[in-house]
Image 1 (cartoon, one colour):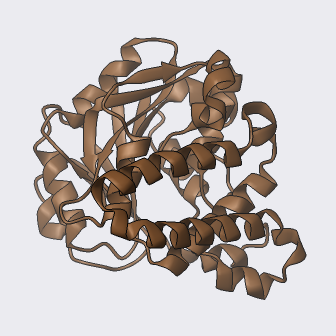
Image 2 (image 1 turned 180 degrees about the vertical axis):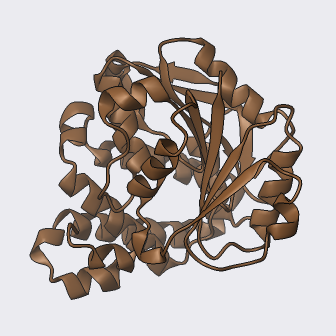
Length: 305
């Protein structure tokens, strides 16, 4: 197996330096490509003794799918591509080894690891990780959509890996999605009879503490994605069904751990719902409004947006 790590970075902070150090301590030595689209904390000293290549691009060139596809095409000799985001930190020295191990099963097209909340994470960031990243591993095939719906195609590029053969078969990452390029690929792979694996023993620290308006903006973008890639819900079921299951699990967690946060939960979930529903109807909005409502306003400057 010839793996290649690819990490898009934009204005990285000191947490990114912790990621680099966690990669350096891994049980296996995997070459790293950093695709840098914006200045941030200096990392030159941290990569001095690592097998790291840096590719600089203008921030106007960045696209969640297109930039990752460019990174893969720079390393045609690799057969598995590992992706991390700059705010994820590998939990232990064998995280990458464990994630790559699932590819010994030739039916696995892509895989993702477990996300643990950062130390000091807020309650809602913690809940999202508890619900979406359980302790037990699994591998889903297309037939599992009957039981798991759109969750069958869930994956996160904060820590994920893709088999080159499978990526070539489905045409690689999309070039123009606002986000969820990972789900797009996972869904395509499932339809092509590959499996999507979840490796619970391959862990990273990764979480977000979004404000109410950030929740709204993120879910607006998710709504835009599902409106434009409507085939995913046609094949796997509506995202609203998974949203209801999440709220039920979230409610149980809140009531058992911090019931006084229940009003905030209602407000947050309301903002998510409103953002998502508005995103589904983005075709009725002017581009100027989309830029204001989106978490990625620069996306709307693209001709294809």
